[in-house]
Every structure is written in C-alpha cells, then in structure tokens.
Length: 565
Image 1 (tube, rainbow, N blue to C red):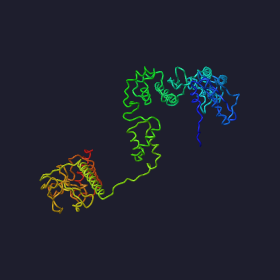
Image 2 (image 1 turned 135 degrees about the vertical axis):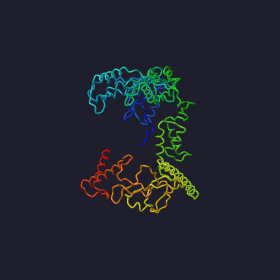
Image 3 (image 1 turned 90 degrees about the vertical axis):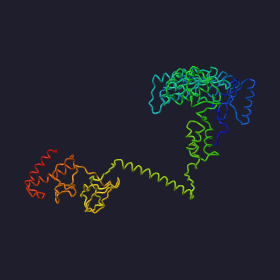
Image 4 (image 1 turned 180 degrees about the horizontal axis):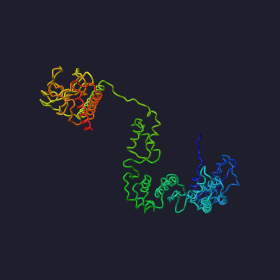
C-alpha cells in the first residue's frame, strides 16, 4: 500500500480556513474526477494574484476547467453542499428544499434516506440526536416498521429546523472559544461559539450505562464528549465553558464520588479563572483534593507525575523495561519501576503491550548459583539447623499432646496395685487373647523413684519384681479379684481363696459398684446357664452344688435381675 503524499483535506478543516475571506472563486475541472477548487482572498485587490497562481498550476499539469460551472470573484459561493460568504456558513437552499418536500416515510429505507440527508446538516441543528431519537428507534435492525405520532412529530420538526437554521460563524483562532453544554434524559448537546455567535452544534443520543448516570453525571459527560469532539479547536488554548450548574451544586451532599466526577473537578481547578461556574465552584471549593494537585504547571497524583495520553507513555515504558540500567524485566518489575515515579490510567496494559514485543522476557532462564565446596557446606549446615529446629518443635508438640490426659501416679510402700501383664514379659500368663490382661492385686514393697516400684510378686512369675509406673494401676476397695470373663466357666473354682489375701470369692455376689453394660451382660449369661440347667434337670454345671440348692439360688438371681431392671 502506497500512502498519499498529499492526503485530501477534510471538509471541516477547509471551512475553518475561510475566516476573513470576502472574495471567492470556484473552479470545476473537466475530464478529471475532482472536487471543486475554491480560491478565496481577504481583499479584492489580492484575489487576481491568487487565482493566477492556481491557473499556472492547472496549465502546467494540463488540467482544464469547465467554464460554465465556474464562478469568479463573488462574495457568496456554493461549496461542497454549503453556502460560504463573508458572514459565515449557511445551508444549500436546493438541498433544504428537497428535505422540505420529502414525503412521509413508508418503510425503514425511506427513514434511513431522510436521516442520512438530514445528518449532513446536523452541525446546524441544536439537539439533533434528541430530535432524531424516535426516527432512530424505527431504523433498528430486525425491527418491524412502525410510524406513529411520535415519529411524525420528529419528522415535521426536522423539516422546520432545517428550513430555519442559523448562520454559523467561521472560527477565528485568535479569539477565545466558548462551549455551552446541556443534557436531557435521552441525549446530550453542546454549542461551540465565539463572541456569542454559533460555530457548530454537537449532539449525541445516550445509550447503555450512560442512561443510568445521575443528573450531574450526565452534565459532566456532555462536557467531556464536547471536548473530545472539538479538541482540535480547544487544545493548547484557553476556553470558556458554560453549563447549567443547578444540578451540580448538590454534588457536595454525595457521600461517594465517581472517579469521572473527580477528574472533571480537577479540570475545573485548572481553569477556574476562565470558567463560567462561579456559583457551582463556590459550592465545590470546600472539597479537599489530597491525592491530586498541580505544581509548576504539572499534575501530580500523590508524589507521582501524571503522564498525558501521548507517545511519552510508551517511551517511559520502554526505558523502564530495556533502558541502560534495566535488564529486560517482566511485567511485574517493569510496572513497579514505573509506578514508583509516574501515574496514568491502565498503566499495566501499556506495560504488557511493550513487554510482549521482547521474546527474551518470556523464555525460561536458569538461576545461576555458586556450587563450590564452601557454598555446599553452608547449605548443609543451614539445612541441619532447620531440621534440628523442626525436630525440637515437633517433639515439644508431641510431649504436650501425649501428656494432655496423663495422670501422675505416685505409690507408697504398702499400697496395693494391679499389674499389667505384657505379652513379652508374661508369655505364660498371656497365651491367648482371652487371658486376663492384668493380675493382682500386689503390694508395693519399695519405691525406687516416681517411675519405678518393687512389688511383692510370687515366685511363679519368674520375672524381675521392679516395674514402671505405667504398668501399674491403683487397687480400689471395690475391685473384684476374679478376672475371668465368665465366673461360671468350667475348670475353675469360684470359691478359691486368693493366694495373697486368703479372701473367699463369692461367684454369685451382687456387685456393689454401678452395673455397667458389660457387667450386666456377663451376669445375664450366667443366669441363663443356671435357668437352663434347672429346666432340664440335668447335672449342675458347677461341681459340688446340688440341684435343689441350685434351684434356690436361681430364684434369688431371678429376683435380683428383676430388681436390676
């Protein structure tokens, strides 16, 4: 693609250059598709010299004019659909007549054609978008055509507006521009003026989230939109803004301000001497802008310099990423370097766009380490220290957890204790899993320390008489001596005297302690055996007991069972 060496100028730019011109000449060319050539001068005496220069260029390029279509030395000329004169710019009467005679639309296509022709002169019509809103609703895609009273009223209003348009002045860049703004529920509008004369009108229909803005939000949105539209007029110049500030004076009562509103307030601070906002500014001047301030003509956010939306942002991002003292850092480090000194919106996106251009930033890079013996020894030493600290910490935690429910037992000589029979130490006494896990009680002979005791242990155990306190349990007065699972099982004498105490054990005695579920279950099993033996009148399951005595004992036990229930 070959770019234009001399791009065709915009129509608005050409009209802006006509200020001060009073004599006009229009030349139409033959055999070449080219727009009209407009020659203009500030005086009649200098005009012949201007079009003489143009004729010399046409002769050299062998271009010929259509004499019938040319206009020479006039103070009013039709140029590209506009009527240009020393007083300003006006609409073309022929095109306005076409709009005036336009029939009522009967289809979406007719509405679009009318709206397209009317939009050519939208700079002459105040609140153009607001008036055109009913017509735009008809032109929506995939919508059924509908023409009602609202559309017809807008259609007739357009005709009236375009036939009574004001004369627009040509801008004079030596004078101060004025911007007058206003907003409604469905649209916004603004007027660019100089010396009380209108230069251009701007309007826009509100869509999307903007419709939900509060009143003062819309007032500020129209101002921002107008400044974006006419920035080529207002940039690098002082200008005056006029707006309806009645809704803005209540902004002070808002508890939370939108960021857009704070930005607009900052702009007012910069232009407070030239703005026609005296009443509104008097209500707002009590706000304390702690984050933004202006110093020596520069805007700062806290201690960071605010960067405008120009190529300097990319320059700063490049320097922070690949400058002389930088090392092609990634997005995070580059962003940290920028945020330390500068501030602008969406800085991270700009940094990501710059960093993506450098492939080396995205490659995996190995970490360079010193692997000499000294470095290894230091690493091993530090590793050992960390392991030791972890072991000590975990040991302390284990001791604290293990001793949470631990009871400290201290026995004195003469105390009676139960002895836990470990399988490894008492292999004969623990031959099967149903064997008693404890034996005793045995008397304490000597306390070696708080953890070791000597017991009066019979010689049949053939083990050392010294035991750890964890293997001992205190003997209570109500504890039973017989530790068998079933006190009526065969191959045993329920009335055997204990070797140590010589106390006879009653096999059917009622326990004095609370009856637990396990103890009640064993009692019930024993009772069932006795009842069964009585019913079948067989030999008693216990040797040495007559059947008659067994029946009497069974009746007693049944009475005890009823009482236990």
